[in-house]
Amino acid sequence: MESKILMTGPMCLIENTNGRLMTNPEALKILSSIMQPVVVVAIVGLYRTGKSYLMNKLAGEKKGFSLGSTVQSHTKGIWMWCVSHPKKPDHILVLLDTEGLGDVEKGDNQNDSWIFALAILLSSTFVFNSMGTINQQAMDQLHYVTELTDRIRSKSSPDENDYEVDESADFVSFFPDFVWTLRDFSLDLEVHGQPITADEYLEYSLKLKKGTSEKDKNFNLPRLCIRKFFPKKKCFAFDRPVHGKKLRQLEKLHDAELDPEFVLQVANFCSYIFTHSKTKTLSGGIKVNGPRLEILVLTYVSAISSGDLPCLENAVLALAQIENSAAVQKAIAHYDQQMGQKVQLPMETFQELLDLHRDSEREAIEVFIRSSFKDVDHLFQKELAAQLDKKRDDFCEQNRKASSDRCSALLQDIFSPLEEEVKAGTYSKPGGYRLFIQKLQELKKKFYEEPNKGIQAEEMLQMYLKSKESMTDAILQTDQTLTTKEKDIEVERVKAESAQASTKMLEEMQRKNEQMMEQKERSYQEHVKQLTEKMERERAQLLQEQESTLALKLQEQERLLKEGFENESRRMQNEIRNLQNAMKKAFFPSLPRRRCTIS
Image (tube, rainbow, N blue to C red; front, side):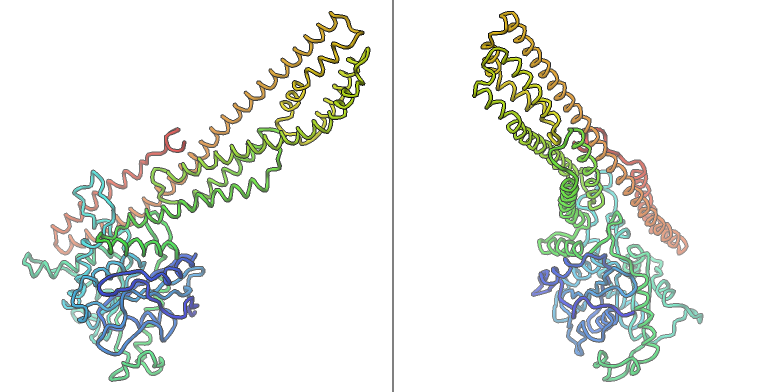
């Protein structure tokens, strides 16, 4: 299956101009538009060793990355080509071709080291391309791998209890898989007369030499680094594709014009990359897409440009800051959408509104939990909680105002005819007070029967009646059919009725406060519940990653012991012990305590 081209051709992602590394905004823009997970394959090697040819084959094209045909290095910086993954649906294959290492025109190999480190940091599969056999010269060309401890940090600052720990011990947990491609390989793959595979040849070539001389140390150092940093390794040996000057036109030649063995070897290489190269993943199982890769590129290059070392933890935290902020907004947008669809103001009861808020809040928290990661001290979840609280309070205020406006209009509509009758003197006559009270009760009943008044109905009615007390009292006092005693009794009745209504409103207010307190407690518990579940998932993911790393380190330690390298084995044992201690901490996580995590 051929790759679908997302770009018409490669584009420079990281420019190397006059010894300075700079990102290309146009390339970053392309990355920012890729929402699918990315599989990142980077290739590194000496200039003029045919790196670009292999990358073009992975892209499914003959032309693309510059092959060149002279002793000059054609690729400067790091070039990118994004194509649809041919075997993983909804994934993008990001191909990174790097400038040739050891270019005599540069004079200084400082940038070579940074290009090598960036290729390691950005890729999920790292391809090292060299010519001929794996001899000491080939290992010497890989001296960049021995400098990685001086070029990359895994943590921004070591834990207070880990001051004796070699930080490079963490590299294996996030370094890419390693593929060594041997070009123009002319020897038979055999050892001591026995045929071996290319993978076995690589393992044989990585065997250490016993001895303590400086020569022995220099021999062992790159091999130790490859074995330590890249436990998953693969090797491909390629015959020479063509002979003579035809090699200069390699990108123009059809497969039928190439050595059949070479064509098959390239096909096997591409098939392996398509099948086994993993999605770029950060610590915690965070799958990288285009925008995330963009942030990683910017963070690493910025660190190098400012004289700092690229740091994985800092890059992940920078990425988390951006994505967690977006996760808060995404959660709030979901809440607004849900409430906008469900809420019809004014709501009849306060509890009804709180129930709708609680359902929408729970979904909003779920959206945030799914979209966020590395939320240090839960700062972004606290921000979400604060914004949701404000949204709830705003809805409560909107509900109160909508109810008040609705009731105010109803009171005006229902009681204005009565007020007109009072002005006309309808009730300023003997027996008028009783008629007035009778009419007043009828209108109150009518008000109560009106639907959709909301939570302010009683309070608005009582406020209205209180505002008309002087009018009611005037009718009472002018009614000559009532005795003074009857008038006094009526005054006391009205006062008692008013006091009873006030008591009822206070009880209603207290009930609302209790409902609000209950809602806040439920909100807190919902945050803690979902956060705890997420921490449990993250703990399980961390343990899985650490168990995988532990298995690889134990395997390497056993190999060192078999080869008789006790000192190196002891150093590996220290790394294993530190990892086991970290796993114990992960097994007993500190879960959020009440009121101390989300407030």
